[in-house]
Amino acid sequence: MTEACDLSAREARALIGRRALSPVELYESCSARIDAVNPAVNAVIWEDRQAGHAQARAAEVAVMRGEALGALHGLPVALKDNRATAGQPCTNGSLVHADDPPALADEEGIAKLRAEGAVLAQRTNLPEYGAGANTVNRLFGATGNPFDTSLSSAGSSGGSAAALACGMAPLATGSDYGGSLRTPAAFCGVAGFRPSLGVVPRPAAGSLLGPWPVNGPMARDMADLRLFLAAQAFHDARDPWSFGAAVEPSAVPDLAGLRLAFSADLGCCPVDDGVAETLHARMRMLEGTVGDVVEAVPDWPLSTDGIHDVFDVTRALSFVGSFETLVAEKRQLLGRNVIDNTAAGAAYTLSDCARAEVGQAQMYRAFTAFFERHDVLIAPGASVPPFPHAENHPATVNGVAMPTYMRWLALAYVPTLCFATVAAIPCGRGPTGMPFGLQVIGPHRSDAKVLAVAEALEGFFAGHDESARPVPDLEVLAAAPAMPRPVRGAA
Image (cartoon, rainbow, N blue to C red; front, side, top):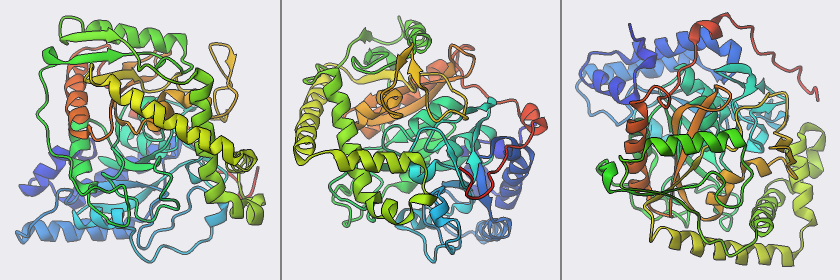
């Protein structure tokens, strides 16, 4: 018998609307799953059961009274621990905020979810300030991969991805700069969506000239992502990228009419040989079903080193703006990723920053031109299979040393540099037997098209044993030892 927590968000919401499922029953099912398996994976790092029950009971009363119900009415949503939520701590995974009082009010995006009826009582783990693609920090420790708890769930939305995979909530928030929701989705066998800039506003962003980070939905499949995105999208004039247009639903296309391009390395990124082979095998499955499947990449105007320099400089610049004062005042409470990135940014010159901005504009134009010939571009969701969470990052890819802890994420950050819209979909298992995912990439503001194509591809791959979404063994997780929590302040 299917547990309520394993229902899709759509199924659960429909049952709630028909009075066939109580929001209290759904919340209690999610909480029971947290009790059973969260100790082994450490995905949910905070939960207010009293508040969760109160919200679920209020949702149930609204249903029984016949009140108008929001799109997420009664659905538990796990919140990445970087979103300010009334009555909840918001630590950003940092010792800096370990003793901060609970937030007094919801930030705008969280208020929108609450208005749509979401039950908000869980918070998920992340690397400190989201700086890293391995979800581990000195406050809460590591989040293990639900398919092998010794391995990483990636990051920075690793707690959200692991919670979804285990059925702790039907929906979870994520955020994405260099792949922070796409890479965890690939590692944990779930779905994520990096929307176009401005679809999900960030009115409190520290810098309005640094548009790279976005908030986005995470779920177990694309149809649930559509539901969640519709609830997250709104217009806010305080965010200059917010353009006031919701993502209109688009019919799932006939695959036979698609012009699909794919690339294992996007022409400039390190990628594990086994990952590349898995991508090619999945693309061969599409032959005879998709109208046109070709291996192709944008005509990049920069050298490979030049492309990576654009990312390194623009990201480091954002760290200086966000953390320079914090590093100077509270260095002892911060981890190496934040400290080292801030120091790297301070070493760049104005000339370096200007060249990076010019290079990014050239990349954007070449990337946009590519989609005059292709509907979407497919790439692996991650360049390597999941690695031990005891390691900060993969030190090498195919024996080649990574010059920075971010370089292995180039498959995700290169689309970011081009203002891409990207869906991450699960696609079976990869070369080591761990989850494998795909990125479905489109140009800026192609959200409806990318979502529809990704859902069509997801449906195709779900029909084959080798590419269907993998599910973790919950009995194994329930019997596994608990993930250790760090002693506060330990290095």
